[in-house]
Length: 276
Image (cartoon, rainbow, N blue to C red; front, side, top):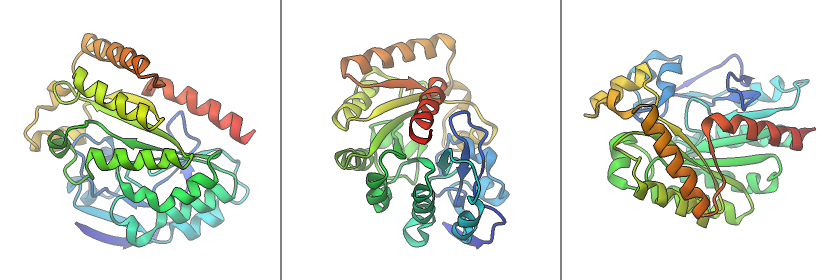
């Protein structure tokens, strides 16, 4: 992996996602190199996008900028790292996520994070202290190590993520599992759905699920891994069948579950309750 430090002119920005008011990305590019990632098409540094998983830019002055940028800014929900993983390996050295998280929470912003890394433990003390303003989700697309390596080449194992989310929940932190993207023939089996719901139940986590979308950037990385991107997205009948299986299985395990399309309404209600 090649890491470059850069200066940035800003920090927090308005989010184009319905469930978020703002977004903050301390890093550009992502070492995890997930072949299906939508962020490939949204990464402004072309070398990081074209060499996905191998190039990461560190926005080294983003914390200083954030402290100034939030002055007078209306409070709302901030998604930390919407186009990269906030706890990828470089976070252990630079701690830009942790420092930004502290500033936002201390100033009354609601924060949500999504990761695939046990490095999130670095900030469990903050997430527990500000549990009414924060939550963290762990992406677990599959419980199988071999399938994980196929689509997420540089990520921690699913088991390591599960153990981390269980620890977070035991500390009173609001947790959720992102089951996605669901890909036809990869992670859409009943066995896979049951494994995810079992983990969610035992960690007291809710589940958000979503299906693979055939983005331009991910088509190239998926094809390079030997898979056919056209075959992973399925059709409407397949998505309806898998959605029904997820909802039914979640009920059997007493797990709260929402589709990605429904999630923005859940987040809006949280924002209203915590900030107003």
